[in-house]
Amino acid sequence: MKKLLLLLSFVAVASLSNAQELPKQGVNLTVETPKVVIDKGVKYNFDLVMVRSNRAKKAKFELPRVLGPKGIEFNVEQSESNPDLYKITANAENMEPGKYFYTVTCKGKGMQKAKGLSMSFEVTDGPSMASN
Image (cartoon, rainbow, N blue to C red; front, top):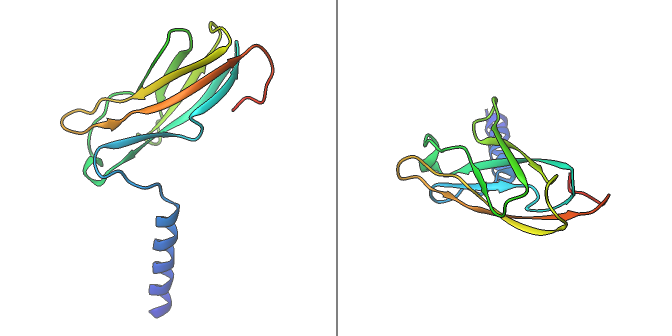
């Protein structure tokens, strides 16, 4: 019995240390790389994760939107297996080289809110060490 309790305690501590910090209220939008370098004409795929506070576990949210200068086209799709995971494709086909700033937002239904996420996309002319 003591071994089982010790094992369960260890598993609980290990999982808490690996988990992202929960927001106090609403949700936080997170990506692995908020600063992206992308070649003109290339598509960049990334995951957006919605980290929910305890109060927002069952709250409903609209599909996230990416706001910023025209040019980079964004396609957002919700994962079928995880409702808090979104697959986003950024297409820089029509962008001139330069650095562009975007904000990812998501409206909550009711009183829940999502903290926006800032991202930068540096569009280059040719092959680079792209972030994909």
